[in-house]
Image 1 (cartoon, rainbow, N blue to C red):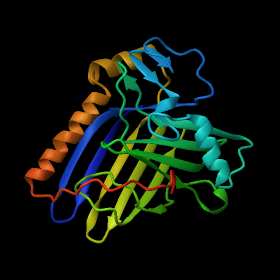
Image 2: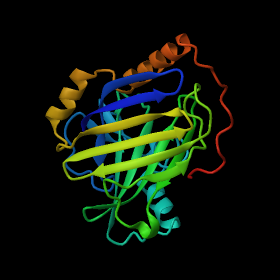
Image 3: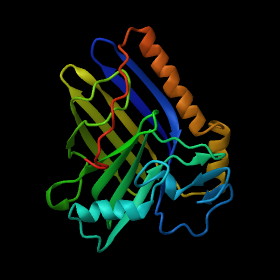
Length: 244
């Protein structure tokens, strides 16, 4: 997915940016006929490793973890396909601010795990679903209490409001952190195209440093917030639970 992400901070100290991003949407159980430049669980110019997703950071189980989380929450996996939307490694370097596990029943999205990582080595995931795992529509808002430290310039308070628009040809995700007159709005949008050699080559040319670029942009935005007078908060201990 050749998409874009926008972050807009609310409150007295405002900050906003929009950047282009490259994500993959794959079925981790079906990765036959992979194009050149892409590898699964091995070194490649672009690669996707199970250890990067699902479970403890750096020691993930991949899709088996996501299936277990969905099942433990009461979702019957009969007829359900679990897909992963994530940024791949580039030349071995990995960092995903957020990746998503989609539980699809036919064309219907019935549950999502938002897998959130901070720059301090921590991870926490938010499970989003409607009662009875009814299909998630474009207008549906799924709410979860914020419990995980992401930005050193924001408190652990407020509620996330998730909205998803997932079709066969596009992705649209909005995460609205509501915390009084503070918070932020983050979006991830873009069209879906088949995984082809040309797409990987284009991503390497457009954004040649991959995840390194993502980390550099995070540091740059943090510097801007500090210059605007935003208060810095030390990293608290992450939640003991993997999933909220």
